[in-house]
Image (cartoon, rainbow, N blue to C red):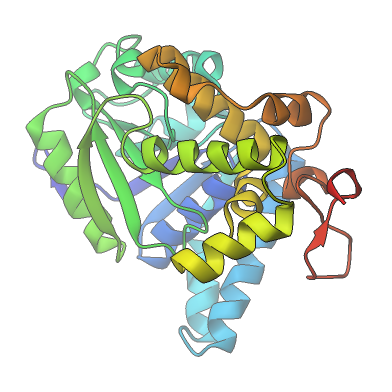
Length: 302
């Protein structure tokens, strides 16, 4: 893969959470050298443990050999030093928290620390690529790569071009995504892009249906699973995504369009304020008790 006559070989991923470690896994699996960066050594250790477990599952399914697993792991290194981690990268993918201030700070720093021809990508699920690019010296080299969770399994990558993103960078990222075995879809930079502009209002409406007493948690999810052939109900999916992330995206849509139909449900706001964020906190619409995969409706909604 080339960009401006230079090979895209060295990848840096910023943020070692669920999305970051999944992105690192996918690139290393496809033969790229990856540096995974986080501010915490503990977070990086946990990320490598997660990648190791996910690779073990691929070995168990005969998708890769034990030797291939070891080779993949050897292609991933970790760092808590942003400057050292990005200075040789051809592509940097930011996968930090879905917080505009954090992302702007990261990209402002990246603009000073990376090679002049490095591509700067963000895994944001809703925040404006144009706004992120505006804090850099090279807005034409900033693009969105919105991977789906779980990254190693999901085929879609939303490739979002900002107002200034060049055709050359867009083409390079589309082709690069294909080398990962993904199916990239090019979209333009408007609030929520495509995936979350459609998905999040549906989830928000499901929460409103619960809030207004139309039906209970399991009933709402069952209607959508059995009636609409969704693999997961919208309330369970919200828990899986993270209710705080859902709220953040709804706020981006509401602020971006100014339309009341995008206003987050008060129940969603209250749950996030109370720390009930779904799977990550152990409770959302369902309770996630250690040692069980059974979906148990949270006491609040029984």
